[in-house]
Image (tube, rainbow, N blue to C red):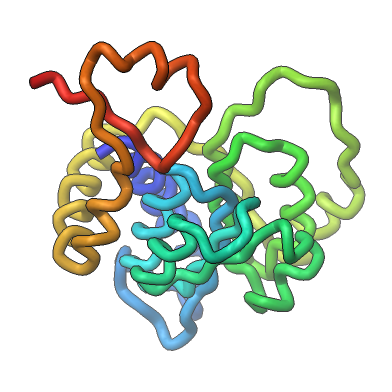
Length: 219
């Protein structure tokens, strides 16, 4: 259920916020409109991959922007559920809209403020930008505040952060994991890339990261 609840809470808020646009957005969550909205997920870790699944399941035309060149295990997983993968090694943020068109939703799942605020420049008209990451304390970054403010006003944009999911988000996660397992059984299985005994905990916590999501078996 975790970290899918992050996306579930974010999507609930998206449906609520976008009732401001009844002519182009559904007032009932999960109901498609004649216009298929385009979503961009920043990051292909567990938060990003499960967020992409939730977005595809809600009928968004979904793209995931991540560092590793394709093909790789994550890009193959995403393609299997109908999402599209874009590597930052091959495509700069400024070029991403050429691959997508008007970006209606950005779901940030990296915790990297520099990439997030760079990509915010390319959020489309009537778009929503969701922050889920918490950046480490580093030095300040340079942001074009004039451009950001101008876009927020003239393009009718919304930015919000989401944290601390409630009961409804957990219930939605349970429902949607069951749906994912029916639609994409192999993709759901591949989210857990390693199962390890308890005595391997030190290597998992302190060693080099690898895979998508590794778990410790307690039996």
